[in-house]
Image (cartoon, rainbow, N blue to C red; front, side):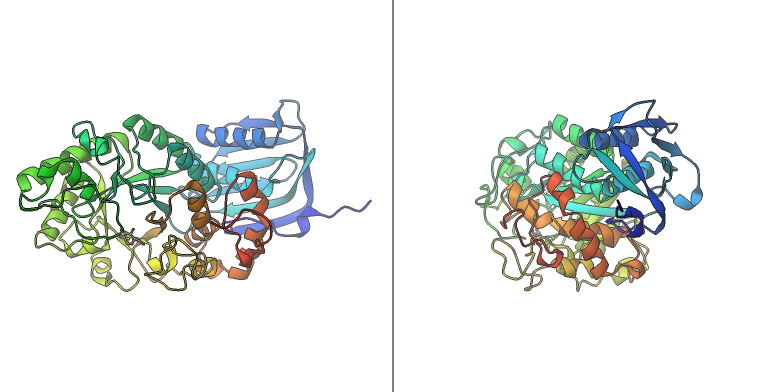
Length: 482
Ligand code: TNX
């Protein structure tokens, strides 16, 4: 009986690898594999074991097919690159544990979504490495809280698409979500509020340490954001002395306005020790080299001075500060990172000075905007047509010479449930992953649509409540739109 030859078609992989060479034939796996782990790559080995468990493939030293994890110092692969060869056996090679983790994720996409009696892999060789080293998602857990188990699930799903930065927007007007032991009322009071209709709550330091380790084991660095000096109503409501003495609005806030609250920059003796003490506890939890200090949407005569001083504070602790683009008006060391979010903002001077950028222009990457124009419970202030999948995919980072990479941002003023978050994140986050991983010259939307469309069973197997995107042919069945 003639069987379809799996090796005839290029595999459905997202993000698209740098090079894929198809070889004739296929490798069949029935029941078990032998694992050969000569690498010191505990995270990749654990990820591989989870993949095998999910597909009900056993590990047996007598099995005829071997999966080999190997570290090899091939400079061409860079810090995150890998080689994957399917021949009579499966060989995964990288310089680092992170590279091997990506190889495991590629293998996961080559395999079926669900267990099968006999698995087939096309024989091929993949050589792959990312275009950008910052491939991120920013989650606003401040307006509406997201529980630990949802963050874990999101980390697993991000890893599947080789994303490697999870930026947690931990504080804002509507809530303070990170326990600070020297300032306990920040969560006792500030953690109890939320945007109207949203969830309140906060993370203990132990929970955050758990999330850091959970993410790290999956190749993802959690980047914390403490948003100062604006967006601080939850902090002011918790500790009134952080506000100026004539401030009479000190109540918890659950509205949608931005840009109205500020730490009292005329009381430096109060404000800077506060920021310093919060920062010390933040740094003890998060090993990330980059630490986000916010700095958005505030006009104040002492704003630039505040940014310079906090950037220096972060640097003194051996880390690097990130600020939203507005921080570029301040005098800071050239390694300070700016996150570009208004498409029209003039960031040229910062680029000229060599400041690295994280690219999140809202008309492409603000996925609190609709999957389609007029989607209920979405913003459209940045782009009235929303940010459909094709729009996000069309972004070209190459005109930004100092870009570290890109980050999609999910603000949660209007996203109050796990289901709504899933709907806004997927499948758009997979497109963001490809924009960051695959050079623009190699990307075609029609080809992405073909590959991503075919990965629907993988999203289903991960229980993702994705938007049923018509471009992907997903409008039938599947999960309901939020
Ligand atoms: C702008 S992006 C904001 C956020 C809002 C978002 C809503 C940025 C630095 N500030 O505070 O949540 O728009 O789309």
